[in-house]
Length: 342
Image (cartoon, rainbow, N blue to C red; front, side, top):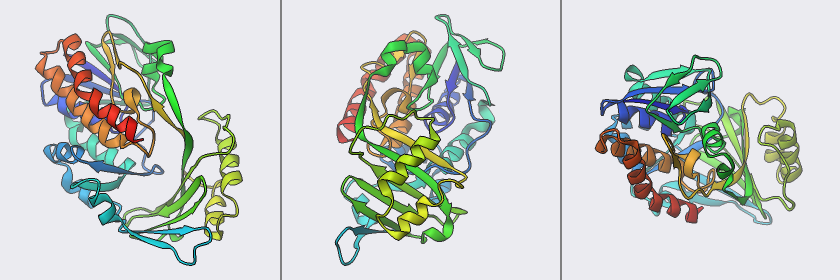
């Protein structure tokens, strides 16, 4: 059975790994020319994503690449001293098994785990899918697949192609998230420094193996921003408007906006599809049930969803109709729980 997965970030490589181990012929197409090595932000893996990663044999590599952040120093306007928060205690209260790792590192680890058995095609994307599984690509020749999976994130191209108007069932949660690559000297190993004010938060952190540091900005604007997710200039202007003057350190982070090698900005938006399968196509991870970037445990949810989908396709003997129904039933409660938490 031939399966096409669009997206090589988190859900896509995990799904590909488990499908090949169950005898499926898997191709992963990724729009980027290669795996991203710079930029991105730290993500959290909780149970059961940790358990699934252990079954994949990648936990030692994940442990080598954790951020190692132990302490959060939170500066609040008007406070004489920063609040000191122990990360181990904080996350220990939420989960008995947890690691923090850079998203790009995690993606690379998952891709490497199954690379020998999976066909990876970089620098291309899906532009059409018909009812019989015939897929048209932007660059490569058309091919037919038994199942097509969109694992291409919140702004999923596969979802837009297949679901059409239904793909827009979203809820803006009111905030925006940005991540900026800044010089490593702007942060200290093991310590995340945070500056908080009403409706906004800025923090910096790094890790031993990183050549840079990351500045993260989360804010709720007083007036809605009318920005396309590709409007980099408008996004930088919005960040300066919201965060200038909070603290000298934050101003230095903002000073890197025009020369940073990596910049990310997006609204914290939640997908609220009632079903994420149609015909031979289904969605996994943020492409189908993103609870909201940085607020709903979307990375762990993506790993779980990929593992469940692979298992249901195998249990159904390749019957995608039966498999998709079982997959949606199994993932509905975790998706709704993450959505409510976000």
